[in-house]
Length: 305
Image (spheres, rainbow, N blue to C red):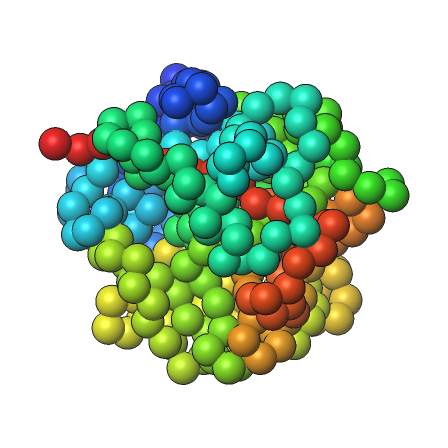
């Protein structure tokens, strides 16, 4: 049976909004369940994910929709890669040069600089690893493959530099430059030495150390499903095993990693070719690294009374 995702929640609720003058995309809350494909199905015995727009038995809210332990109805993600809007503030608008040459701390600060009050002027932050993963889950289920370049478009991945925001075909449900153009820095995922740390899954934005050491660079074959106190890596798409040959991987997008004290970048850059994509991660730069190929993207929590 074919599914019309345009009229199926939560996809049907994804929409463009303007908040505090910034072009954003609303991603509605959803619940997830993980397991193996049932007997007789095309995915029999293989890892599978289910999504629901309402709570069902065996499902839990995806951590992208938790803030301070409370469920939120949606999060907002920048429609465009961040640009320098002046006064040290990150912005999201079409036709702008991506803001690059900033460290992870500087990107976090530039997003937080929009927090000057309440309502529309509160809740701004650098996109988190859970907000990336929420989009990845929805893309994967909508297209039935992690290869978004093949399904949607390569994006700006075979050139000599970044293009202005909104200028590529890497667009998913209103989000432009969804991969390629510049690497996007991600909060909530980093290296503590060589071990993987992630934000807790209760929305408190506190890091928990998984004790895991991500694999060397390659094409992902499997992703972590490890659980511990306040984390469940099944909610994310972080490679646990890789292969040097693309055809041997389960994902066509590449994984770079890791170095000691690594930052997390997402999506690929202008010259990454087919290694870029919606499931591409980079763990081989330090948190203090800044480069003309590394940018970021705004996000925002809603105001919940």
